[in-house]
Length: 131
Image 1 (tube, rainbow, N blue to C red):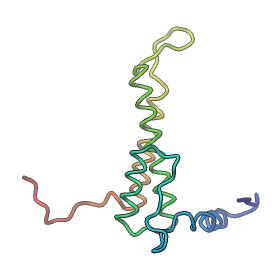
Image 2 (tube, rainbow, N blue to C red; image 1 turned 90 degrees about the vertical axis):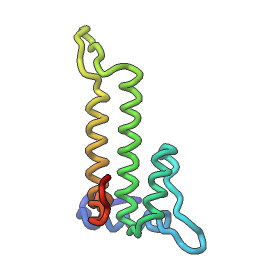
Image 3 (cartoon, rainbow, N blue to C red; image 1 turned 135 degrees about the vertical axis):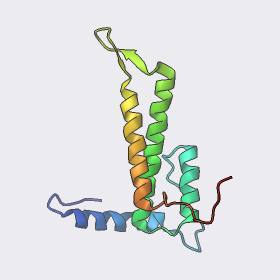
């Protein structure tokens, strides 16, 4: 999709929405929407559960996909930290926090923000009682 450099943010959003709407919209004929294949298995499973459990507009699916990508990025960083440690040595031999710690934190914050944008973080019903 080519976007003119002089396009307003609204025009870019409209063009993006039009370009992806056919691939994200479920229909009775095609069955459930397929999760993007670049997501991890866990992120795809969560993506499908949200799409099937909520009435989402096209722009919501774009936000959901970004949240799933943030989840994957967070998990990739977590795996790297688990493998290499929370603290590593820099080029001068000094012990420093692993750069993946910041990646993990940023991705977790992004995911939480996108989930809030979708309204998936709503408070539980008032009739639920804690034991």
